Length: 534
Ligand SMILES: Nc1ncnc2c1ncn2[C@@H]1O[C@H](COP(=O)(O)OP(=O)(O)OP(=O)(O)O)[C@@H](O)[C@H]1O
Image 1 (cartoon, rainbow, N blue to C red):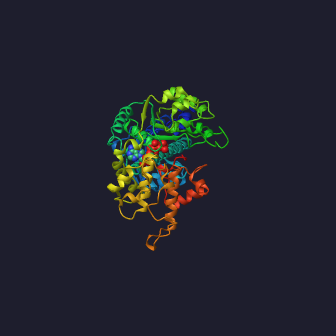
Image 2 (cartoon, protein in one colour; image 1 turned 90 degrees about the horizontal axis):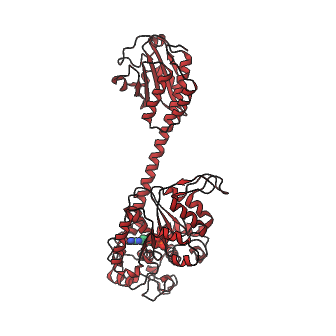
């Protein structure tokens, strides 16, 4: 190797550094800078220039050496005017140029930019990885000599490594962009569905609710665990989302785990993740909700349903902010703010040894009890307006309102299913009403003391399938009747589709058949219906 043109190398160390460079997670700029540093160690040059391909042009993006002036740094070459550069890119081979090449070929790439002597040492190295061609590296030296082949071969390997690193950096950037897009998309969808609102909390007319909202906002600013209690459908999950939104973690993930919806055997893996091979079917590593919620908030919904064996593990994760994924002995740390919700009486569960007392005290540092709807009837009118607006965003049916008489009817009912039941009643009424006003006859609910499940006893507000006095103009389509019936049964089962007592069993259908029928009839997997699926 010519001493003039190759720098003294440190053999294995240089090779190792090159491999390290190719696997680095640096940004592209940093990568190019470090790449040129490395090159200085193994080859002599007065100018090394990295050109990247952009719209048929080779644009200088980095330069190094005593000749690297401002003009060089802003230099651009039209590829079609330099057949020898094109050839190097097409053949993917580095090559040195001789005096002969310069006099018969396409001229020097730096003509007009630098005053290099004829016959000076010059080399062009393509930057290619996989199918991609990124650009070229050119090396120039003011001496009249030709780079020997061993030096060209070495720099060619460098070019391949650098291109591989560029490819990895590009893939990383694409991945991060997609990840950001996904995150923003998910936030947008969530905002559209929920109206980006915590609902009627601070604007409540009920003093109890307003006080609760005030305390929730205060605790939101801290990392204190909050235990939200309340009957089914009172808005526990919504309140948890509000606490997350009001906290400094708002830009981080909000993750929920419904402890009642997941088979006990899978809960540990759902919470803490698992490693490949941890159990049959664990074909790859999978993150649990704790990891997914890292930096954000994790809501443990129906926490009272958590099996006792898992409660000890959860307690440790809360105390030490550390846990081991199933099948792994590696401890994972995760900074997560825990919120828990339950509709069951945890004191009773403790007395019956179904819930650990130490875990209860850990979770219930700051308890918040959501009142049932019957204790905040003053909010009914506002809630109807709010829920109808939310429904309109989902279904497109705008302008619906409840008439004063309709409201009186709603106020006379006990709402055992609380806000969820109210939302379902409004949706049913909207489907069955032609105009925009929902009057008393639009609602199939009965006054206090009536059935807890309105669908079971009340006279239908629309002609029933068996109605003998049905007139031609009032005949409902079969699809409408099916839709209404399914909605009623879903209300009855609190949205549960699967299992004994689930809607599918009551309707005598396979759950998958019911799911596909719901899809066909436009009964979406709306939040209020999904209580048994994750
Ligand atoms: N503050 C609120 N303002 C308006 N609507 C609300 C509010 N809270 C809840 N809702 C409505 O009530 C429905 C039930 O809310 P959510 O799922 O939060 O209740 P939950 O108490 O967690 O129910 P469950 O105990 O069954 O899990 C939601 O779909 C939402 O539309």
